Length: 456
Image (cartoon, rainbow, N blue to C red):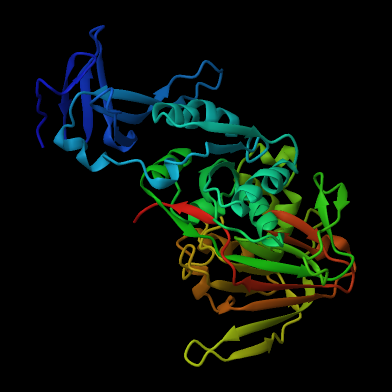
């Protein structure tokens, strides 16, 4: 499509050209300006007192740091009328951005490589201001901040029937804190909060799974065009004596009892794992590893797969029981795996654990299916081959060495002496199961939270 001009398409009094893939104009200072369509977050109508349209777009600014990396910031253009080429970007503010309660913004300062605060200042705060939205900001001061906020504010509003939108600038940890608090509450919820994810973590499994695979900007686009969808969850119950592993593995903390006092329970929405996956998450959860971003997982995996002393990778000892449902009759059946040695064991509600790590290709995002994946002891090279296949469109599930199926429940009875091999991962949280103990996973029938999912 050839560029065209119209006298009423102006920015700061200058005429605008709209081409097939860009918007361009000459600024009052005489410099040429251009915005590619791929950098446009959205177009909204201005208020009645200020007619016209506001174009929100991402702009790259050279950094003053020595690394010479550019900074991405959100900017705006005010335009008198809407060129036809921009019509696909025009949106009306959705209901989750038109509420009496201010938008609640949670900045997880420790997530990933620690970029959440900068993402807020450069992208999210301008977004809220350009849309004229009221907002309230919370910065995490410790690993307990989101848990405390959830109990004191978010849960309280939900029980009082106050609709609320919560923006999480975090990884999966921020979401699982909300999930855990809401599902452990004995109070009656009147309205589920809507959660907008601005991915700032290392893996960003939930964000990547629902389609937010291009970083924080994709989260903003979802806020403008997406719809709330309920979040499936699972319950992970543990035998007495099990404890959370905290402070980079140096300390232990208690797990809250289930509301009926029957068991130690953590609720999750992403993944529960034992073996290689849990070990590499636990081993890489240090400040030294985190500075490498998602590469930390691969680095830790190499050390586990090729131990420095030249021995073979560890063979995890335990008995695994699966409960499945016949989709035709609805009847449940239980299966005890004949194998008692394992290398990689997990159950997941999402398709992706990282942007390109497609662990469960058959899983529909937010569809509520729980799928189980396992393979037994292998050489480091053979295990790495399977992991590489997961990065190649989830091809690992077709390998004869991999067990992959939909399940309702999973139980693991651990047969390990050393605590290191009894650590499990629940959405990034590490639990040390007591010697001779067990873990049981089950799908949660309740739906207490919504995530704002991009429209197809």
